[in-house]
Length: 95
Image (cartoon, rainbow, N blue to C red; front, side):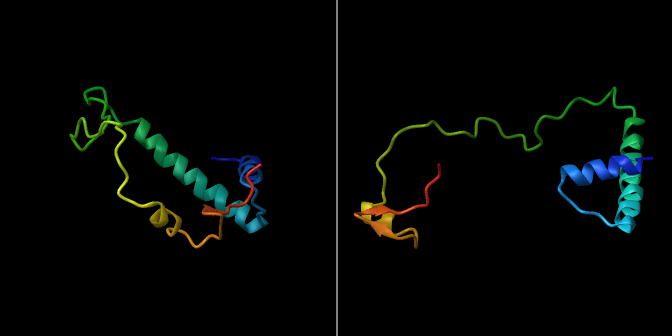
């Protein structure tokens, strides 16, 4: 069973403030979840091949080639409602 201290540590890392009732509830729920995971560890998967992808698709990536854009300069400026200054889109400073 997961301890009260473990629940409080998870809550602190998640920046959650929990009431006493919530601490008890999450302690029970997290313990149940970990119990289900333990059940999965008991399943014999030695005869099962690892699955890396399930769609069967391969080579679906296209080549990265430079092509002419079909959008005009004006079209590109008009895709946003942000203000424009001197034919440039004005955005907030990042740094």
